[in-house]
Length: 353
Image (cartoon, helix red, strand yellow):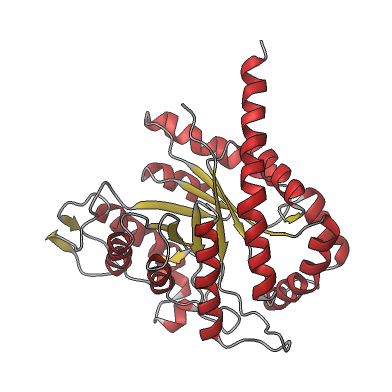
């Protein structure tokens, strides 16, 4: 039986504005994030992902701590990172923090490992950007060894070797669900398959169907390995309001602020409203009424054959109250409508000779 599509939410803990229009302290943003996750749990959202950053415009530098706080006031929602920057962290400590989260949450922890799209963590923790590839490859290799739950013997170039070393706490049931986050590298897609790990595609712009070759490559890699393919997920930005017009009008100013701030660091031109509208119509921005967003998610999920869709619901300084309303609509209207659309498409496909 085909696994039903899981529907989750992601946030980077973007620093938002308060009622006075001024940016909130990081501490308040984190408290608001916990409240947002509590609402998502209440509404039946499958997953909440919290990103790791080390810069002023994002409040969360230690996702596991925030997720532990969320674990204490939720009961069913799965808890994970989005992403954990493994290259500039210690794989053993990452595993220990998430295995502890898994214990505290009664088996709800997940981790999405990636290299991240920002580089602030490298100088902060004393790593050289010139070792960008080597750090991730070797640390992922060690992390994969930890996932077996057995004593680890491992040797690399980035740290002293391990000999028959056990790591605690152990995962109570099964293994720690671990995804590989990929932004557009075929090598990363193949690497995920080689380690037999689920694939999380970060699609933040352009037609999502352009990632179909990566999905096909992942399946081909598994066929060559003669193993059952692991799940594929997708992370994209979005925002839900009562109508399409309201959603776009509310999101556009703050989305532009976020996009232009990051773009200025990377040499991108300022975002024009025409580009924003194009992303909403044809690209990877899931903005609109519940019906519009649900139809777009269902279309993408069907085209790519994914098993998880996570909407990045925060957008720069977009205020907490608007994020809460977006989450409310996502959980109460978008999710059931997506499942209805997917079920209808499946029934139609099965009835077609």
